Length: 156
Image 1 (cartoon, one colour):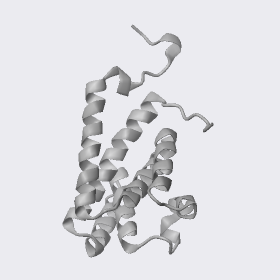
Image 2 (cartoon, helix red, strand yellow; image 1 turned 135 degrees about the vertical axis):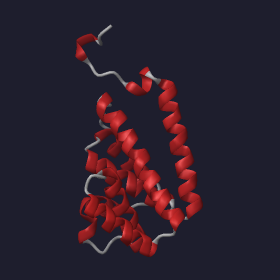
Image 3 (cartoon, one colour; image 1 turned 90 degrees about the vertical axis):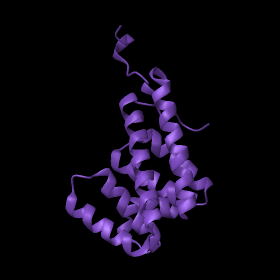
């Protein structure tokens, strides 16, 4: 049966087993990132940056708040889209952000090779893997929210 009024189906609600598996994957990825030495703040920076690239308003709303709770500053969040043009991010953060962008746009093989090579200069193999997994996971959540048109409501 079609959805009333052509509204989007919230695929997370329509297929909860699939969504729960994604949530479980995300939980495992956060643990892998922590074990690799990537702190929660960096994970949230990657989540926000990937969500910016994908234009996911809902995930930007969720992960900007999470980044602030993790200790991120409004200044750095405000310039995150232009992270390459600032000195506000560490070498580790820059490497993870480069990998996140390469993961989000895998068809750009030149950027992918460049980002991967740069990351290998400052990140361990475990950190490279974890950063890519964080980006893969948030990309999946972005697609769930974008295709479901999850709303963002004003904060009270």
